[in-house]
Length: 282
Image 1 (tube, rainbow, N blue to C red):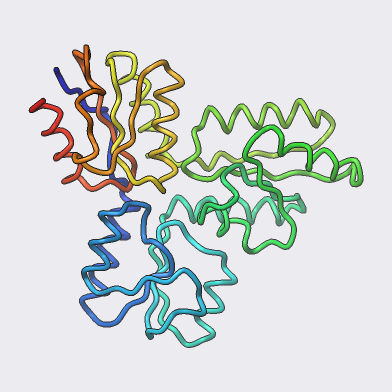
Image 2 (image 1 turned 90 degrees about the vertical axis):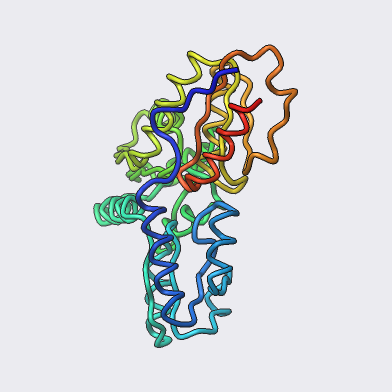
């Protein structure tokens, strides 16, 4: 069995920078991280071992310094932490910041803000956290709420962005569905799907066209890793999400001559290497 790696895979610059900042800060003194730095269990364990404290709620922060994760937070959360006298360090990915700024521009135009993404995802919660009114769209069924709102407010204009790790094709499908459902509504969409996500999705399409089975290395909480699995399966390839080589199963590769290997944007190089070694050995 041969192993072929995707042209683009693994950690993006935003995740690498966040990890480097976290490790540097923990070496300087007590540090609390608000949430999981990135959605990868190996990275989280590494940061925990370095001495950082992890909490999910701002009120639970018990150190003078706090680090915001790569997924970002609402500006009101950042302001609240500073007003408490905390030293706030920000590991928000620059491409997530770009999405925040795009949404703020749309709101400044007087538009009702709409985010395409997962309602419970920390990035999405951060994007909408500064707005009293907003809509999150995950699928076509969520367009019912917008249609009902526009019936009440026919002049309502929409400003739409996407969670940075959403599949671009899916985002475009939802925008087209929105325009069909609301043909008389002024809809402005700003593409905020990040380039590393786009690169990895395109690389997976190329990989799936050549391989029998696809392995995606990433954490179960990683949206972009799960989306890579979904994309591979939609292209007709058996695909499996694993966090380490220990989760690989020989029966997945029966009658497989060429396996494709890719990884989400928060997956460490060492873990990818271990999975690759297992595949090549077997």
